[in-house]
Image (tube, rainbow, N blue to C red; front, side, top):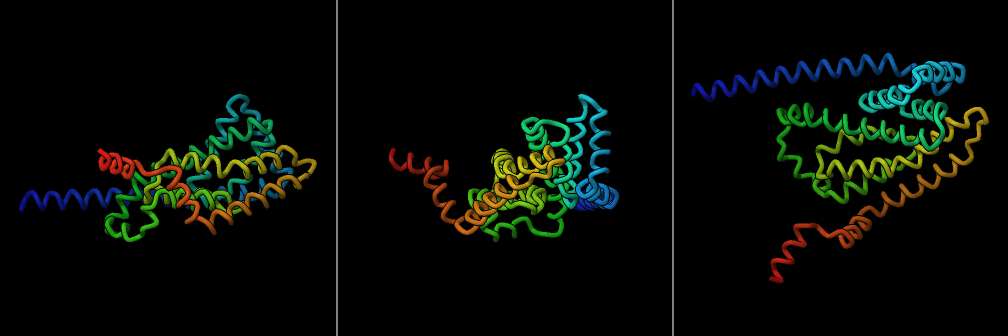
Amino acid sequence: MDDIEKQKKQKRIRLIIQIIIIVFLLASAVGFTIYLLPIFAKIQKDEAFRNTVASHISRLGSWSWIALIFIQIVQAILCVIPAGPVVILTGMLYNSFVAVIITIVGQTLGALAIICLVKIFGKSFIGYFIDPESTKKFTILRDRKRCCVLMFSYLLIPVLPKDPIAFIVPFTEVKIRDFIWINVVARLPMTFVSVYFGSSIIDGDISTGFIIGCIVAAISIICFIFNKQITNLLDKLIPNKKESTLEGEKKE
């Protein structure tokens, strides 16, 4: 009985510590969001302010790209804050090719940071309130390829916030390396559009971006509508390792 009571006590202590940490992180996230959201909105709308911020970042010299990546990681974790202003600033400070690389790296690291935080704090904390076995009822979460297709489709859609998808990854069968590729490929078109807009912001030429956005949106809708068919096609092209092993054993 003593051992059982000790285990229960240790479990309660761990829960209290986790709650304190999570409350602190949530409070910090809310505080930073309230502080940063108006600034990001002003960057997007106010050209003079945008130029001032770009000038301040450019003064960092060779450190400016690191600052931009760091800002993107923070923006991804807070997720409510739009990513567009940072991407536009990057396009203003660097040529299109370099700006796209910096943006993609920042977005990827931001997504990885979210996944790590959810794995460290989120899953164990939610486990105290929800039976982890109950998530198995949601078959779509266990269908790795279909989840990949749906995530890819969502990340393609222009305008919609992309970072919240990373919060879902730890609760699915999607592997991190798969999500990284999905995140990079799906976000690349609109990242290019945002960078292009940032680099040509003075001219205000957004026609190319609009056309690319429409094409990407159409592809996304097609992927959503035919997600089952795409998943079935992937099953044929990329058979499961377990199924391949079983077939090999039967032949033997």
